[in-house]
Image (tube, rainbow, N blue to C red; front, side, top):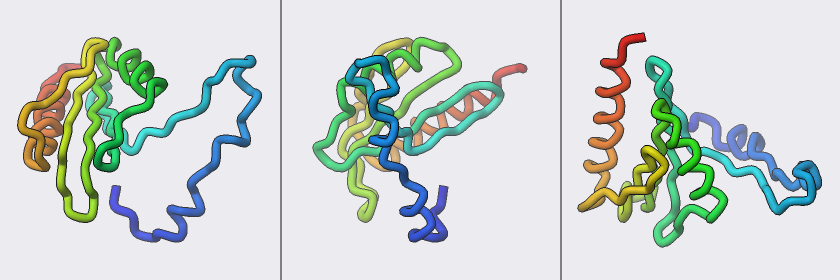
Length: 124
């Protein structure tokens, strides 16, 4: 997704505190996903984090649960968007989080291209 209108984008971000109390007395709070790609019924969830930031415990639980479905993959990376520097890449597949060796923007692109190749060849 290319952001064409930053003001419109910022005005579309919700504070989910408006849903507090909807989750049966638990500590549940909504999470967001930064991107989602679908191809032939396969889904790639994308989550970008700032340097040194990791998924929260709730996100980790959610990403593992999503990835237990063989049609879902979750790709999380840490890095600096302004410089397009990637410091860490984690792929959630089959309910497990796997670190990608030698993280870089090129490695991130390879992960996406590999997912697409698999999803694109799948027969409906």
